[in-house]
Image (cartoon, rainbow, N blue to C red; front, side, top):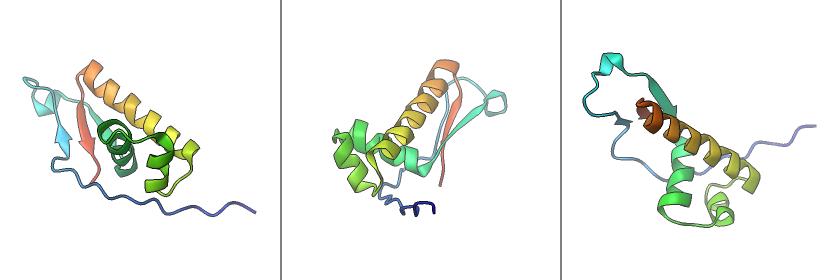
Length: 91
């Protein structure tokens, strides 16, 4: 029997949902899509400065799941910055 999935709590609503490098036309850009969960994880850990255990509790998820979500988000953000891609946040 599989373990039931927890419903993640998402409280953060970003003011902007799209970021792009300056000077590159939209039609030339590739996109990297950040999920709502990934954005929430980055906000809690990196912006709010919470510990991982505290952040995972606020999102109502396990610490290992929170770490996986956060790692995925950081990789996507780094890819957008390093490769000059647009960053889209799911609405």
